Length: 179
Image (tube, rainbow, N blue to C red; front, side, top):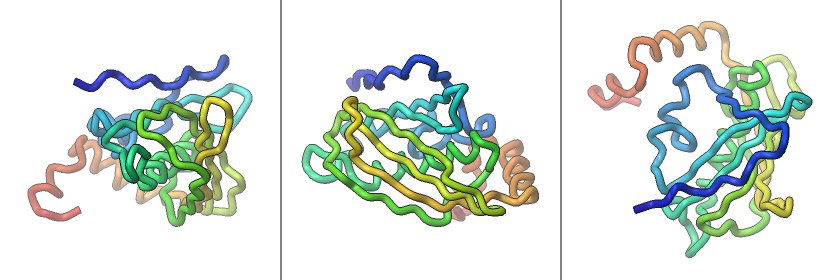
């Protein structure tokens, strides 16, 4: 039996948020309702005085890569989703075009920490972001930079229509073998 992971307590003034459109992240590999119970847990927060997005994160045993350490791909996935969530939470519905992750220290399995993501600048549809994963003492364990591209209105309409007709978004792909 897997116990419920301890997520670090949010700071005073942090307000829980769901940065994505209703129901769109339910199937998220990182934070969705269908994410492996022992892989990762993520909870998102905002402050009224900041456009930064904060996440409390836990990496479970199914996120293991090197012995007793979190797989770099799991760390990258959490930083990726948090930067994307920062886009959406700040009115830029966008998807990743490029992500660079710098791993500063090994992250032990069972680790609970924080991710902070923020928009560095916006140029037309291009949104440049940064994020960092820190421990309780503020030590940076990994950091990332990314370029996200804002979706066009037609792309958003198609996605919303698909989500409305198939909320799980997977029935047709599973039946036809397409992605």
